Amino acid sequence: MKQKLFLILAVVILVGSFPLASAYGQDGSDIPQVVNLPDQIAEGRDVTITVSNKPPADLAEQLTLWEEQVARFEAMYPNVHIEGLELDYDPTAFIAMIAGNQLPTLFQTYFTEPEKFISQGAVADLTSFFEESGIAEAYNPNVLAIATYDGKLYGIPTFAYSLGIGYNIGMLEAAGYDAPPATWDELAEMAVALTDKDNNVAGFAFINDGTGASGWHYTNIAYGFGAMPDDIIKPNGDGTYTATFGEGATVDALQYVHDLRWTYDVLPGASLDWTNITDALVSDRAAMVIYAGDQFSFMKSNFPDADLNKYGYAPVPAGPNGRVALTGGNLWMINGSASADEQEAAFYFLTWRELDPAEFEQTTITRYETGQFVGQPVLPLYVGDYQTKREEFEAQYTVLPVENYQLFNDAVKAGEVTLQAEPPAAAQDYYSELGVLVSEILSSEGADPATRLAEVAEEFQLFVLD
Image 1 (cartoon, rainbow, N blue to C red):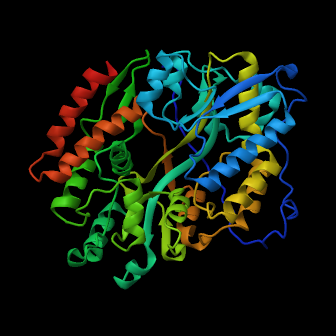
Image 2: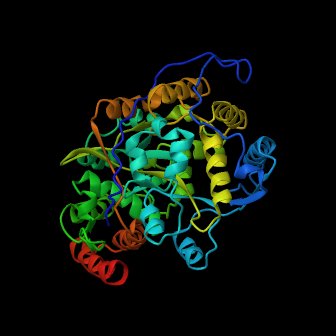
Image 3: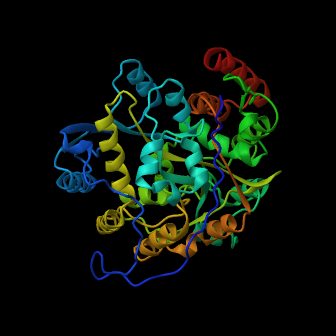
């Protein structure tokens, strides 16, 4: 593989408060326009595109926002027709869609996935669209590198995050702690003091349901213990890869997971998925959890009675190489088999929706009014005045107190956190395999982390990478 998908992000996070805007468009934010929209799309010819991730009917407020955006764009370009699909990304399903030439015109995927689509010629080269629209200069170049292959751009990033530690401020204070753990060893020690088995309270939790999400959280721990992406899946420089996660820091991390369960006994007995880990935090059944910054929006949307003032967010604890956090995110790609007209319509629909100042402001206000926007510690996609003005506008709608994640903000701004990319190939397959192994380690005290990890790495090489 010629392109390494590394994400090294610098974060500039504005801290402060601003008076609530009295009406949409009257706050003086002056977000600059960075998208040069064409007068016509497809030279006025009728064109229909399909777009993934349309909200389902049971998410009525999100669906209304989506439909209103589509209507506004179609009013601007009457010849463009947008058909939404209630289709979220799934690695296995989308591979089948490539084979059957059934990809949507415009679809969302993960930061780990571009090479999979690019290497099969399944997605469109968007370089000329980036040049014509002028948006490349607004993006953090390190983010755009994720969607770049041989100097050409194949995707449009729309979200970036870093994993950290979410925690219940009051529970830590009651146990005598005035700050979250600074190291992974300290986390284990604090978790012992915070655990109350009689009342079903775990001192620490991560997603442990045996799915790819479990492998994802485990990898964040492995990075904290000193692993690098190449220590998990190593590019050989010729388009092939070697599974290298069977030894070294990854073993130390899996042993740590084993010890959290069988030595410290600080983990929950229940199986926790994406929803349940938030439920555990909200219901005071977990004092500290591995969390992504954007999960606070999920908390607010799915647990509307939760008091966000109770929760803090801190950078990952330090390991042998300091604080190292796994990063990731989403980007959109365009079907390479779509016609030139369809590709143009898809590109401008997405970039207008994401970057147009008026659309961004309207979306933020609507999400705030419907309880979907809380403000959260995520990573910036953009640079310069455009990024700063977006932050200024969002700050007035923040529900999650900024001071609750000030530790995270300060650590990232000061360069105290190394933001590390996901494994460079077959990442979702790797997460799935490690999720199963983590579940095994948590279920069997006699399972040997070193032996089992070496065996899984050998199998992964044979059945996935080879």
